[in-house]
Length: 614
Ligand SMILES: Cc1cc2nc3c(=O)[nH]c(=O)nc-3n(C[C@H](O)[C@H](O)[C@H](O)COP(=O)(O)OP(=O)(O)OC[C@H]3O[C@@H](n4cnc5c(N)ncnc54)[C@H](O)[C@@H]3O)c2cc1C
Ligand SMILES: *[C@@H]1O[C@H](CO)[C@@H](O)[C@H](O)[C@H]1NC(C)=O
Ligand SMILES: *[C@@H]1O[C@H](CO)[C@@H](O)[C@H](O)[C@H]1NC(C)=O
Ligand SMILES: *[C@@H]1O[C@H](CO)[C@@H](O)[C@H](O)[C@H]1NC(C)=O
Image (cartoon, rainbow, N blue to C red; front, side):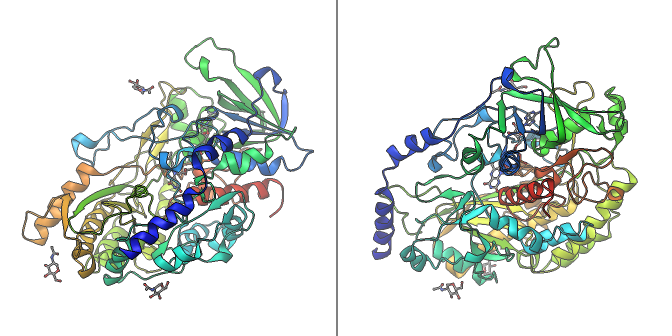
């Protein structure tokens, strides 16, 4: 009980910041400057498509140079409601700041589960304004695989300066750190970067027991997961400003400080339709129209010129669609849609990855009570993360699953639209992923845990299936057709089954057994043999899987063109001039983590590349 009262004490310290008044004040300080459409100039040096997370980073960095003019066009609007800032509102309804679309049927999932949501932000700040504020990074190995794929200069050591540049670490309270054995690695964060990274200073007492449970199964404690060692157990930062307990995101960190610059214009509530090209395939600008007019076939279309470059930051969902609409994409698709071809680039809209997820629910009958006054922090606001190498998830099967993954022809489970070059690209990914799955310096499964509830999201960190985002030939200006292809590669399903089994083992450790865990979902094993258990869990995976953890990426991949890539090492789109992609689309292989911190680092690097600082 002594420990519990310490938790309560900490909470009281926190409450000494008067949150109820702080939030509206903070909100009022948020700079708010949109231009009226008639104020838009006819031309800018740079036109940025999308004022989401990456778009605002690049807008800030480019407009640091007062001689350069920048326009950002964002489909969404400002969301000034202070629920955006209030971290307790992380699970609020965000329908009004998201796109409204679903996937095509996912045929490997159970019939009731085939239509999947496609979460994507439509608001100034993009994903960073509505995301869950997980802020961890992948293992060094994850980024080193980007480099090995044929992208020199894109390994972890190259990205680390940008992870540092984009962040400020708020050092956890010493007493709290001691109580919960919180560790971190100060040197891998900045001291005055735009995005605040912190560790939530109130934790459940049950948490310590869970750490021990994972350790019983061989998971190693790491000092930090953000220094390249995101494999094992560690404390993960959240993108939260702990001084005010508010969301730290692209609008507060990158837009607000730049909002009053005269050389930066932001137009909200407008949709970019296409990028325009001259005869030499050099980008000349964009066409756009007000969001309010997109269903009006006679709507007036406005053209804006870009003197230097057009920068795509429309997110992994719309960046490929805008390229395809502009004539840059798979020629067969563009032909079907009657779009004049500028360059045949089959990779645009392929290589799509997200983290599929399955869920386990346990009830704990004898766990210590959570901090009750004030109420416990949100159970899913976990700061502790287990990122488990495949050998730990499944000591018995990881080699056989990996070897059968590797021995299947690379193109066996790929989307039908894949060309030989794209297949060759996937073959290279397959070798790298298999090699990583057999090693221990990276993870196959992520389990965030708070000790707050027996609710576990099991996230497959190395998706092996590949999906597509292709414009609808019948309606290129409607939402694109999204196919995650979840579990198309049977190795993904096999890993999901092993993930469930790991969850069961965790609840059978001496440590966690103290809590009297009862498996609510998938529900205690009925079959008696291993084969029967596998069958039951396979069904549980098909019926309950979520295709997207909102980590959509890869659809304009940084890879050599001869491997189906879309952008080169400097993020320039192949085959045309004056167009770069700076958002989550360029991620060639999704790192085993939540992508927000990686998107900031990539966008910071992109800004340096655009400014000619390498
Ligand atoms: C609900 C949700 C929860 C998430 N949780 C986490 C988490 O906890 N931790 C984590 O690390 N990551 C999380 N993510 C993922 C992370 O936030 C994203 O990977 C990241 O924000 C993507 O940044 P981006 O710049 O690529 O795209 P976005 O931030 O999505 O920006 C794209 C912007 O472009 C605009 N746009 C699109 N098309 C057009 C057009 N034609 N014209 C003009 N504008 C256009 C969109 O409106 C949008 O604002 C989450 C994402 C979501 C959606
Ligand atoms: C989302 O789209 C569906 C079908 O296309 C429609 O029925 C629904 O009303 C839309 N929801 C919102 C909030 O616009
Ligand atoms: C605290 O963490 C360190 C390493 O991060 C570990 O060596 C130590 O055993 C832990 N202490 C307790 C009490 O769990
Ligand atoms: C739990 O672990 C014990 C050994 O510690 C083992 O005998 C038993 O089969 C395990 N139960 C389950 C459901 O895995």
